[in-house]
Image (cartoon, rainbow, N blue to C red; front, side, top):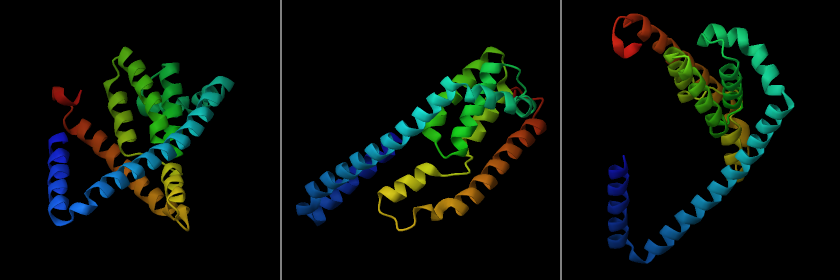
Length: 189
């Protein structure tokens, strides 16, 4: 991928240098400025949500949430590990709020805990659920749209909800179906 992106960047630079050399530097600086603005916006969004996640952890809210989700988590992921269940609960709750970046540390910790008990099925299923980005509230996208000056940044809510439900349902069912179809092969274990 890096080779492809480098080739696209170099060919774009050559094209703009030939067609409009006076706009080359302003295009580079404008792109860098936009990248820095977006990075700072995302930093602020994640700082707020990571702070709330840390408060939930310290207050015991995440443990109580994990206890409430334990029967479901045990059934879906097949684990009795309390730490793994708590991390899975926090990961899924962050994803449901549209905070994929805040959910990642919980997924990494959960996969590490699941690896200790050699629960490959749960690791892969958690990865599939994270890859489809299941979310009820696309808060990151809404915040980015608001910072970009959108008139109604929350218009993305219903299309996002429909897409995330369909993509997650399809991915999980395909994973489970594929696992059942190819149960005898070592690749799927």
